[in-house]
Amino acid sequence: MAYRILAVLSAAVFVLAGCESAAQGTASQPEPPSVEVVAAASARVQPQKTYTTRIEAPENVELRPRLSGVVDEVRFVEGQKVSKGDILFQLDDRHLTARVEQLNAELSRAKAALYQAKAEAERAGRLLRSNAISEEQAELRDSARQQAEAEVSSLNAQLKEAELQLSYATIRSPIDGVISRANITAGNTVTANQSRLTTIASNQNRYAYFDMDEGTWYRFFRARDHALGSPVRIQLTGEQDFPHVGEIDFVDNTIDTNTGTLRLRAVLADSGEALVPGAFARVKIAVAATEQKIMVPDRAIATDLDSRFVLTVNEQGETSYTPVTVGERFGTFRVVEQGIAEGDVLVANGTAKVGPGMTIAPVMLSEAPSDVAFTLEEHAPEVQQTAVVKF
Image (cartoon, rainbow, N blue to C red; front, side):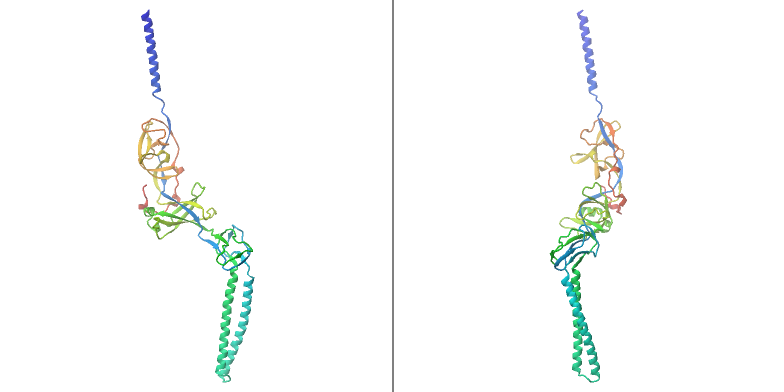
């Protein structure tokens, strides 16, 4: 009986041991984790550089009076467009008008005296030929004629000066543009060439100056003709894209020895009046022609000391450490020059939760570089083949 009970207990122990072993085997083989992956894609991109700038107006006038006086009237609406020749300020010109009238009267009197002097000189000439007058008397009359002519010339010059001073009392816009506020209003006294009446900024085009480092200049352009006409795009503060299009129209003739930079200028049309002078902006310039490149999300690239790598995934879901050589960033995507090919599958979010040698359940994302890559392909510059640089 005892032997039978012992046999039953032994069988029960073996059964329990077998169940525990089965449970341990099941726990040691968990399901592989679901991990987001992407496929390396090919897209046309264009190497570009970005610089900061301030928007400027081609013409910016600080309006100052040419003579001193009292402001009679302000004849413009602050902040509005003005045209060249529009009257902006009117100074008190009564004393100037009186001076012009006085000189006109004196000029009329001088002309009458000149008419009489000419007549007497001509009569003296006839009398001298018939010996009815002395030569001395004839010379005196001719001298009187010359003095009368000089008097008329002097008064003519004084009258022109007075009329010019009178015209300065009416202050006109020297350019087409948008006018600022009136710094001096009616009733105030202004000083010639000192008082700042207002400012006017031209509204036809806008300039954006920026400084390109010497290395970039010689690497991509080298000659002024290669840069002129190159397309640029401008981004203002608060804008997501670079919606304003322009082109390079000026390259300075000297590299700044203090900074090692060369100044360039982009000209842009301001049809929508969004490019306000003084506004901070970013200017993006294409430095080479478009090329076909392999691109992956920038977040998929990890750093290992001084090198870059991605985790590629094979058909069995196994991850592998793959070194890569990266290039320029376009939006949220990065160019990969070496290490992977189009169609290769890689972990989308780096190595935060996944490492090499793991088995995963891939979850493919549908991200594509064409959705976010910024290019200037539609405005691609003419760039020599030697200027197309591999990053």
